[in-house]
Length: 321
Image 1 (cartoon, rainbow, N blue to C red):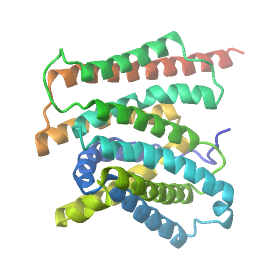
Image 2 (cartoon, helix red, strand yellow; image 1 turned 180 degrees about the vertical axis):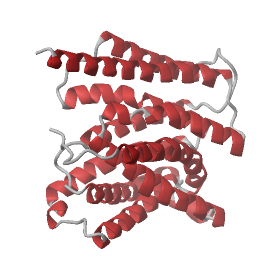
Image 3 (cartoon, rainbow, N blue to C red; image 1 turned 30 degrees about the horizontal axis):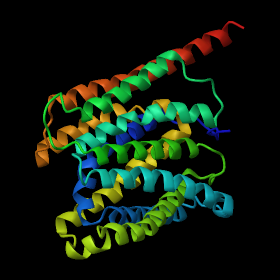
């Protein structure tokens, strides 16, 4: 059972939150690619731990915290959501950008709504996806196939490992998004978001240890290539805008808007990331990317239209009773 908000937020506040998720997150893929060169999990862990502490301090200063928010059940909920969103989702993105263009990685996130459909159906016991929804899923899968096809253009920027990592990352992000709507977390959305960041950052730090032993690309990489001033500025951008603004807006939207509507960020993020990657570090935009983008975004659009029609039909049926 999802938590029902006590009041309806203003249209301006909803629009501002959508703008943050649409535009800010679209820019973070390029920045994550640059920062992850110094250790993907280490830098991501520090980012979310610092952002979580800042948000927790802000909530304490504003008197938004309750003792009941920090019970064992709330921490368990935050750990599950944080692990899915930060470790699988954001950590997967950080790893994928090491071998794949940031624009391609952002494009792969367009399949997240495809996972949301199935997970929402299973976890909330809704009706099975319709044929139209399955068509959307098929289009998304076709887009992934085209992205890796060797017959539609030549580019070395598409990595099979990167694509597989992003499939897992989008699944983890969708699972965390659906799970965050459960009523087991903290009542205060600010406290819940801060706890999820702290738990996710801690899990990333723990996961960096076996990753370091296996690949020597976390702490070793950080010591061999210490961050310079530009890297610290990029990392600070991720903390302030990517986490405190973007992630907080995303969790808030999930509490006040349908998950399918929130997932429309998948339309805009890839376009922003593709343009920024091309403009700042010369990432190519070939015809294969264009074809794959058309298929993936068409799949998402088909699912969104199907959901909208389903809700419209439900309203009409209720009105006619």
